[in-house]
Length: 166
Image 1 (cartoon, rainbow, N blue to C red):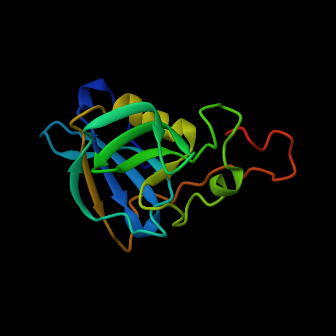
Image 2 (cartoon, helix red, strand yellow):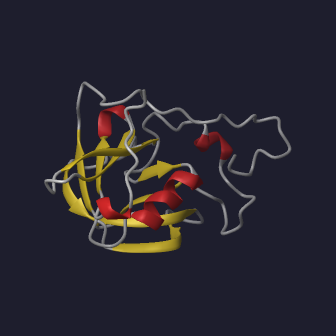
Image 3 (cartoon, rainbow, N blue to C red):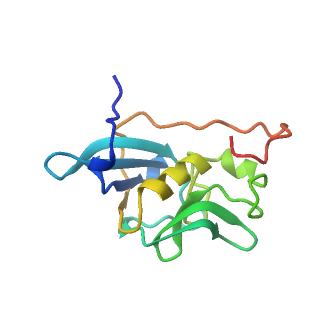
């Protein structure tokens, strides 16, 4: 049986838990008692390597289809939660869909960013679409996961399609 429950619009608003040391995001929906216990989704991500992603409690306060990251880098489906900290796709070299940094994509599941939380495009879009402004975000370290760690598809660096998110 699956550990995931089907969270629905009636379980909204959602709450995001970033299990920082596991590089995993868990999204919970509200149960009948108004508590965040309905395990709805899990995503593999990459947290800060060069600057640690901060622990604490935050909320999403701004969302952008394309967010400017560092010089000449962009992230799709950016959701800001703490100052300049964002949930966003793996970096792109331009605001064009065929320009993903595939070598960075293949690092999902391990620390790799400058502090933001990197995700696949599909996962970042899920957060962007379902976790609107005001969504609570809790970031902490833990030794256990409530589900098996999600995995992602690796991009073959020899493929002519390597600059597209799989």
